[in-house]
Length: 412
Image 1 (cartoon, rainbow, N blue to C red):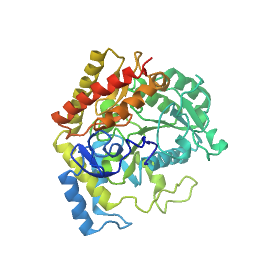
Image 2: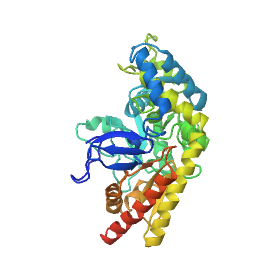
Image 3: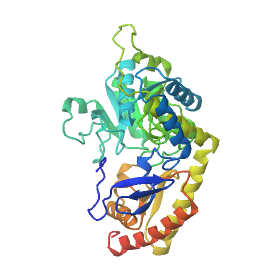
Image 4: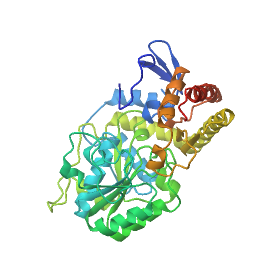
């Protein structure tokens, strides 16, 4: 089992290979794949351009632990397209990117507390493993850690507020603002869209209080737009975390943003009490950078974000039509490029309203889709290579899967 997802014995499988938007297992099953390696494979499996780039770089060297040409080129690509990116520091994965972004913010501001949003996932490290379950309505105090092994003293530095509630964040910052180093947010939280003015309101709050605004763009970067959510919504953070797509399917992530903040991580910087340690054996790995360059090359050439939007919107409409025909409450929330199915009648604007949807129905729906040859998790990633045949198979599977969920009484 990888990550936090497990399957019943009759559905568990071992993957052997993938091609395009399809994947195969050791027992001969074939899946239309909407997991796509948990998001990095935006061009599908084994895209020829990405494979060629990996092969070419492997012959030139797989790792140097020094500045290398592919990493420099990828950093330039990020600076070219991501609005906040004056400078870039590479790290190993998305969790490291959010971890180091928070460390930079604390060092830069001299403050200790951070603000995050209820239900937001930013990786596995101690600071962000808070507020991952629905709370009791309190919105100005820290929430307990969601994992054992996290010191209670650390939890006191993490403040959790509801997503899309600018008034709650404002009230919190009126009290805690002088101690808050950063507000960390995934602009589209998992698959919950920000309401008009919410992100801009956070930008204004940070400007007023001196906190840094950090966007977690591990998912949205180069997917929602080439410049990520900050381009799509027109709000520029101080720092952002990037991952998934920029590694082309190999391990790679980055912190990008203001040069004056990222310079605190420069080796040999004068000792003024603000320098931070930021390093890792495989940071800036040339193999990953070469794969990321090839992937972003194709996205740029093909106007990939627009293609993802169109394909994702077509899939979402097919699923909503299935639900209408079966007379069940259902919608796809989020951006078309990475939407989530929810069985719900009320609007979903924050984690609490999401948690009130039929969670059991959503879980069973995913399992029923797998039984019918469509590999999905709670969030569906779309690739540029999903075809009309893939969409047709998805629709047929979804109709039967929704009927199975309805007939099992999971929507009551």
